[in-house]
Image 1 (spheres, rainbow, N blue to C red):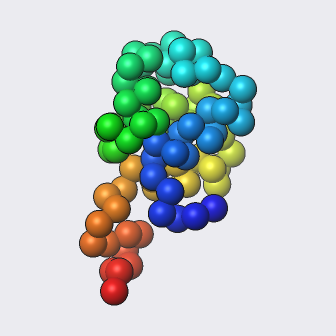
Image 2: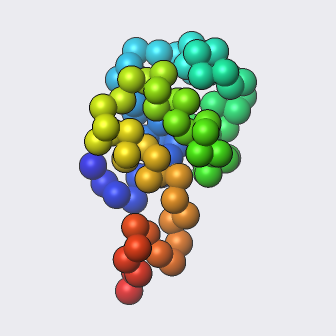
Length: 86
């Protein structure tokens, strides 16, 4: 998977793959539909770590996909995964 894909796009892909609507995922993860929608649309790019973990748990992501989703919370400028962009 492209490492430049942000949290919102990853979230949408995993949600769709799980067969859940935004409303279903929001309810199960204890979030507002608006908040989840804002995450998917990139209006909020860095959810709280606890929020991201709850989403990953509800989506029943395997360890690799969970790590990918959580890594998507990282800032996208300057340094990524400890490696500088040149």
